[in-house]
Image (cartoon, rainbow, N blue to C red; front, side, top):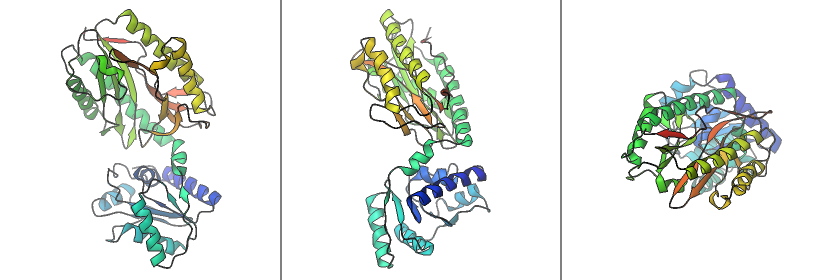
Length: 374
């Protein structure tokens, strides 16, 4: 169960934002936001089955019978949220809570679907509720981008499983296996050694498939001399890890080692450039400069990194368009790569927390090019 004091601090941060903006209430439907605000671990899934209304004094949560008992168990009897499973339309339920709060400015997050938003406006009108409904444009995402101690602890634990899985899979891989076989072994190890979910669908991309940054594992049979890009992560109590390592089946060629060295230098230069207040696109440019100077500028086109937390892609970002300072407490990835079409790809990714003084990775796996299958 999440620490009650920690969760209360998150609600307080939201209410401070509401007061600054002049919002009397907010209506929320986004599961990661609700997980963050309630602290209900391992309760939310792919369904958008929950609606919350937060005011200066009230905390209301509507769910249904599939989740109600789990919420009660997770949050306990002293939970500050008023939870119900009434068989009512969520939009009408939200309008009734707005009336109860006597709210006149009601912010709605822009992640909610238009059908709910339209139904909420209609329900307010039908009930004679006159309120302004400004949009929250990622405001809670920004709040979530600064992690508290509990969140950092959970992600560090998730990475411990991810690092252990790398050690295991390096001893498993042999020429003659398929990408899919390697994926199954890697995922099974994580789920059998502390992970309670996968962070995302694992990428195992061998040989020429490695030149596709988001390749999906398939029937390709690994051969001697192939590089294998492995991008994966363990989930733990709803929080995620994210790591990429590239290994070689048998001894790599001189070219493979040389390209790997460029990616490693780019990664480590970026890690050295990260600190609280640095602008995201400036860190991205560090990787671009290293890779361009080595002659591979045409083969690195994706963003350098992204935030991680309850979602595998969160704010802030390290890419060419993120022009905002990165706050202390952010958890981010650093993942430069070089992708040579039809030949091979290489990516090296750590993730960790941004501090006032720099970047502290959770990832412990080596940056050396590991030879497997020997």
